[in-house]
Length: 361
Image 1 (tube, rainbow, N blue to C red):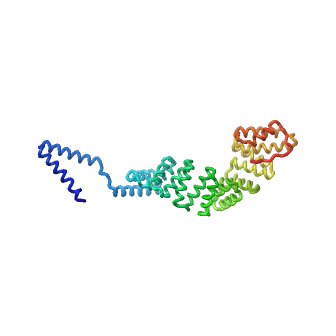
Image 2 (image 1 turned 90 degrees about the vertical axis):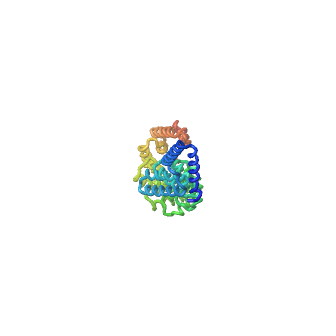
Image 3 (image 1 turned 120 degrees about the horizontal axis):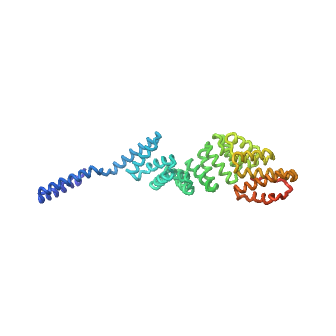
């Protein structure tokens, strides 16, 4: 305790006693009341913590929060992180801890504010920048997420998850070319990641590099459990590389795992290109059984029936009527189909074209 701190109260007491000598007994009673009021005030208002005590208290709260979070008690952990922030508003890691709990609970706006504050307090904190990017991406604020991931990668250029998420974000905004750099880097950092290879395959497919996409998808299939997304993407790129037998086989595998309208519709496209027209039309109808509003399957049926009508020498008018009905229904569901509009204009009035049709979708 320094000398000035010890002597200051002595001077105050001397002044008060001097006043008491002048005011007599009444003054003494007033002094006693004042002392009592000060003591009560001190009891009601806790003494502000010193900087050292604040650091100690906030560290203890943060450590307790970490322990509770590891035990799965998120609510109690969140209270501890909030206590740490209240005592020490510049404690970056407490904001990150609270932000992670809110993110896990689906409270994305709260998580975004906490991670954003952490990133402001400590711009070179990787966890703050990455966590902020992740939450922004989950909120579909993709442009903001990209900027946050780029800041994270300035700190750790070789971080796998940041590269992977950034590649995905660029793909989401339709900039696959920029995404390719980060997708390739993610695979280079972790070559045995099926997820990274699926993501890179999707980027190659978006850039119309389907041969490379097939390579990535096939390697992913060896590294991870087969998923509907992987099989559907692989089938699509196989179709673009004209490997229709493999396309159909892949879709058959997908349908065994998870039947869907889009899988049956793609199967129909594969059969059509293999000139197995009955199997193609049946697959399109199977798609409509699962989803009556799946307009690509309606287009497939229309093309199959138009070909049946043409190959019959235009005698099977029921096929023409069925085709026109499917085209009209497809345009009701999705008017922005110029090729289908042209088919309906050409054949809606029973116009004749002396050759078989080909299906482009």
